Length: 112
Length: 114
Image 1: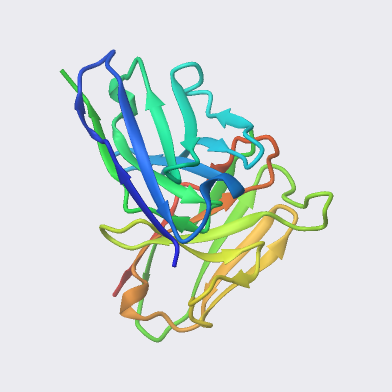
Image 2: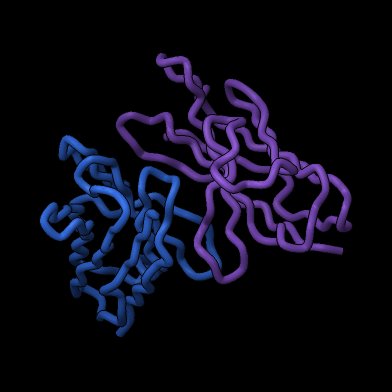
């Protein structure tokens, strides 16, 4: 059974950093493409980043240069390193396998 | 980037009645591999999005057959043959054709029960 469990969210000041984790089970992270998608409070879904099985990575323009997606094959875990955070990055962040299976999300709040 | 639009943005339905949501993309979602990368999701209140339909018309595992998808090119439709109370939430369409990304979602259609 596919399971995705995000963690690492919290309250951070503008300009700060956070690293989100997505622990996967039931499949191998490195063999599939995985994404991060976010949802600002009361808003719709916004794709953030993807990492393909071959290692290629892509980012939404809104986070390019500030966020980095990566994975640890030994831990079967996906990560999102978020730097230079802004108020507009406040959202629930979901990891997704392809776009078929989604985690429960982790809330990131950027505020002073 | 491909822009996704949905109509209506909200829908109130009597249980047992049908419902239909339209999704349009600013570019064709037909890939050179012959597949059309259009997905439908339902986000129930307080939950993560769940995949309903992939590649326009294929139901995901466990999705009731009252949900169906149709369309081609840039125009797509999600139909619920008989709405049930558990179908309330926000429905999103998403395009997955862009290789490389970005992938884009529609604004969402909020469905509630009369």
